[in-house]
Amino acid sequence: MVFTYVSVLLVSGLLSLLVFNMIDLSEASIKKGVGIMFSKQYRCTDESTFNNVHWWYDWHQTPNLMHGYNHCPTTVRSGYVPMVNGKQFERGINISVNSQFLLGFNEPDHKEQANLTAAQASVMWKEVEKHAAGKTLISPAVTDINWLQQFFQYCNNCRVDHVAVHIYKCNAHQIMAYLKQTWDRFHKPIWLTEFACPHTTSAHEQLRLMRELLPLLESAPYVFRYAWFTSRWVFHSHTFVDGSTSLMKENSAELSTLGHYYNNFM
Ligand SMILES: *[C@@H]1O[C@H](CO)[C@@H](O)[C@H](O)[C@H]1NC(C)=O
Ligand SMILES: *[C@@H]1O[C@H](CO)[C@@H](O)[C@H](O)[C@H]1NC(C)=O
Image 1 (tube, rainbow, N blue to C red):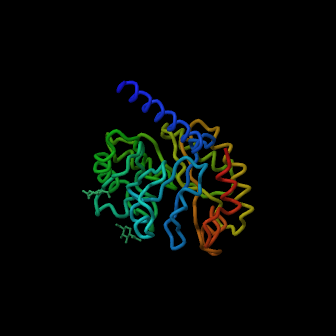
Image 2 (image 1 turned 120 degrees about the horizontal axis):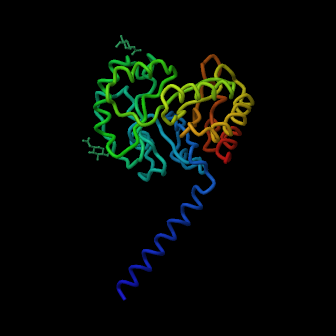
Image 3 (image 1 turned 90 degrees about the vertical axis):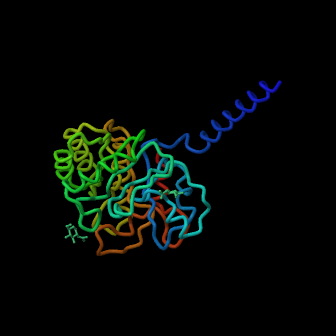
């Protein structure tokens, strides 16, 4: 009797898990993700608003800071991928969320970001590796793949399972060509963790890029994951990336037109 009861519980538990997953993410492409930007406009519902987006990240090791600051409930939406950013490296690594993946330093090839030489990063990487046991470890995310090539030269016997790049271009075919070049050079699955059309204030241009590019990203076998930049971006004109890239409406908990397209795609 006890056995039967336990089995019934188990089976019904499994069934409800299945049903839950089906409602939650059945239609979502497994590749599609989003960078959730921590800004003054951030709302606790931002992650869950992307209900047809498989994974997300926030350039940090845990969403605790962002959630704590905004007094959000402690539950974390599924699909979170932590990052050892490189900027706060000296504060230590503590990956407490249960994720299959771990992202490496953010733009070490940019002074305003992780700002590391390939030699510096290769020394630090040994520490990152210690926290990546049992996880797929993704390279530092670069805009210049020559930096990554240097990193591999310095980083003897380093463990890097996948590579990550950022590409800001408005032409889908140029983006795909750069991704193909990245694949040809490293032969590792690629995470395109930031992309958008720069130097434009036109949301229409962003939408045009998305329409052309997303199907190509989905069908390219060497693209493992991708994430648009970004959930919220409030800067207008005279910046490299304008508010037109924002997937959420300014001062609102709702998706922008662009955000609706991105969320609903596949
Ligand atoms: C790591 O983070 C978790 C969750 O935030 C916390 O409970 C734990 O104390 C931290 N460990 C260290 C060594 O800081
Ligand atoms: C970048 O790193 C170099 C060398 O470590 C340092 O001199 C420079 O101040 C850093 N730049 C920024 C913006 O942090």
